[in-house]
Image (tube, rainbow, N blue to C red; front, side, top):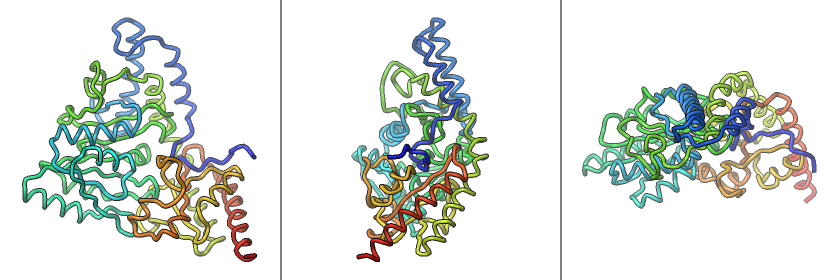
Length: 383
């Protein structure tokens, strides 16, 4: 079996940036606890503080609005479970296209859930959120609205600005999952309406073990893990200084590298190449705005399980959607919410590019893709 050489799964996790690796290793050489007052502790505290400044800058946030967590799932859980408690929410509003971490956290609150749909392009049905808010206002209920900015499977950019206007100055609260948008879109958290926003390190090449929950000042009581007062009392547990250092370094290096990779051109080349081989190719969400680095598509009749196996054997790493679905290959809840029929959803694949991607990757992918589809078609003819 050949060594994996072509990595097209950046939405699952981006390769580690050299700058992040160097910062992580440098922090590993420091001894102590960031909360200690001696020299070693102060040195680690300086590492964490520097990273906080760097993360805040890329997120358009104030330094004190950045709360480091161990993962985006933890940040999301703190926002939804802790937020429901702190805001005394009566119900949770989520879309059917949310990441599993959002849906599971919403269910864990034990509160009534209002699930709003997606349209055929994968856009959240804002009118259903408006209806849920109007219904809540009539009976004096308080809602926690949890939505994503960019869909991790399709890359569809959601109409969060319209949702912000709906929630706006009101008794309701808004959490935005910006994990797939961070570093690729301007967030400007400090000046925008969301009360809470989740971002992640390893999606931008900073490595795993660090993420952040962005919190407005009035949300300081949104907590999940009690402890010894770390993160200004908002998240207990000794900070993972090496991972946080890598996170900070990635926020500095990633934007320029991502821009220079010209991922939009790579995605268009991949889609054009696939369509030239397969005129019946279906690209999900292609008629609306998508983030530039991802394509979710299907070749009718070519099951994703077989296609992924063939591409993997050819040394090309792709996915069938979210990497957080216990390694399952099959149908997607996002595509189901878009009304995609099961037999087509079972053929869906996702390719996602990032800072390390090149046109050579596209060319190698298209060669392998053509061979996989060609073998499948030959078997169908023989049958």
